[in-house]
Image 1 (tube, rainbow, N blue to C red):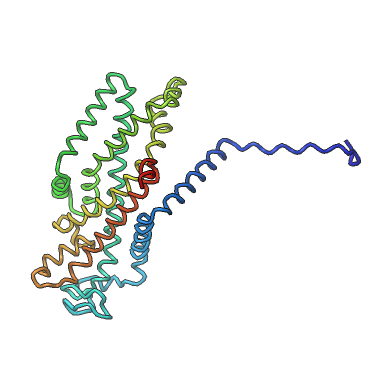
Image 2: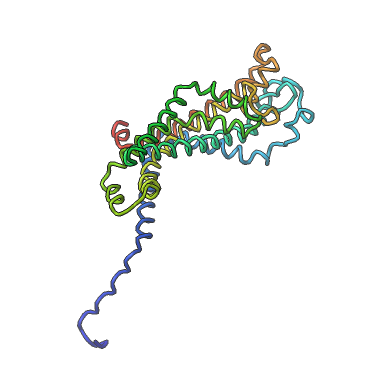
Length: 319
């Protein structure tokens, strides 16, 4: 066919995208739908903005807080100075700025809360998926293992979380790592229960049966079919557990189980109690760290509820 031929030229066929590209597009569209649905939740956006402000202040704390001013010997002010232009939240019993202590303490409190949540969610997810998978398709031995795992979960579930965390913190060597382990090993049972229920629902779907029929083993089914489908539930549970972990860290530090050389919100409250700020009426030493704990816990709870409403169609309909 020459250039003078009046017949139309055939259009070149569009390239067929690869399966990996199609999967990437689906993930991008799903992420976009999630972001748009989350943005319509005003409470969730308020919680997210509050956490961004607090996290930014914690990460940039070394830029505007002198670490020498946080030591007992390098305190720049006088003990128990009331709030003023120089010290917006007053000073503690050593003359340190309470505002600087709260900003610096956010680094430890947020880090401990997040790391303890990672330990708890990881442990709960592994146990929940394992118990749900082998309980539904593991034969007699699998059902026995699933029963044992769930009985252990029930045992941890009925124990008082705070008492168990205090016992672990008292037995293990002192330090921030001990607090993280103590919290992570005590708040995982609800996650395991929730993930197990979701795993049982996923295991009953037809594509899982087809995967088994095609020779997919236990590891293949749990990693490639069950885990991706339970991750939205795990994400919502994670945001809710961070608030619980931060409150638990503050409680343990208030009870004297934390590292006395580390500044955290719970440690500030414990120092205020030890210094007699409660009986002396030094409210600026006690109220700000308590409000910081409450605001962060509320913000994470609002974010968790918003994520849960986005991934749960029933909650979206009732909202």
